Image (tube, rainbow, N blue to C red; front, side):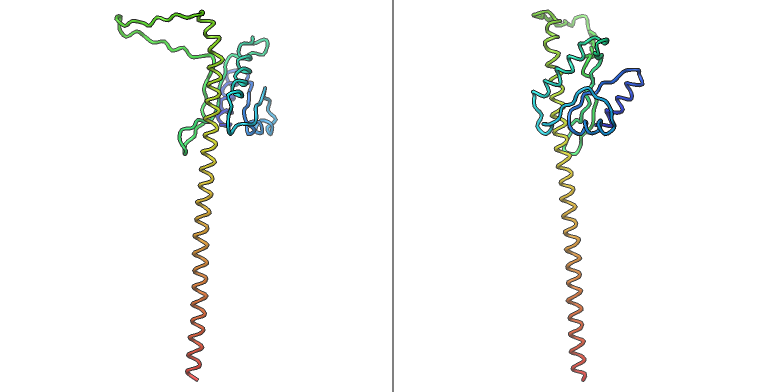
Amino acid sequence: MLKRAESLVAYLREEGKEVRPYLYGRKAQAYYDFREREYDQVWTGGTDSPSVETAREIGDALIERFVQDSADGGVDELYLVYTEFKSMISQEPVVHRMLPLAVVEKEVESEDEMLPLYEFEPNPAEVLDALLPRYVESRIYSAMLEAAASELAARQRAMKSAADNADELIRKYTLLRNNARQAEITQELTELIAGADALSAS
């Protein structure tokens, strides 16, 4: 995930954009601190069990930065980089642009097709202002849950691999021990038989 974030940062900087990272989790913070790279804000703790309150706090900070003017340190785009949980054996780092929203226009296939009519109360701008923070918060919380599930799956996979390796070592050394014991018993029997033959010959 950190490599994916690095490639996104490099791509944005190639386009002449300034990147201001916001971090979530101790690993991301350690990665940036070790390389002495700047970041605007970090949230740590609770990555194993993400909370809505943390997602809301992150969302509020990002929205506040997004609505600011560029001259005051505002940003024009918000990207979310996280590990997407696909299955217990597959987790992939992904990048989603949260803001600005992409507008998808649908062409009317036939003239008879009726377009839906919407009435907004209050006006559309106020509705968008109310929904946008909730949208950002929900996307962030969803990413936090996906990342937590991905980390748990990776831990379980690593522990299963370690347990399988331990079982293999137990089987290997049990076989070696049995072979050594069998060789020792065979040696003792050979010595006894040889001694008995020597006594009977004399």
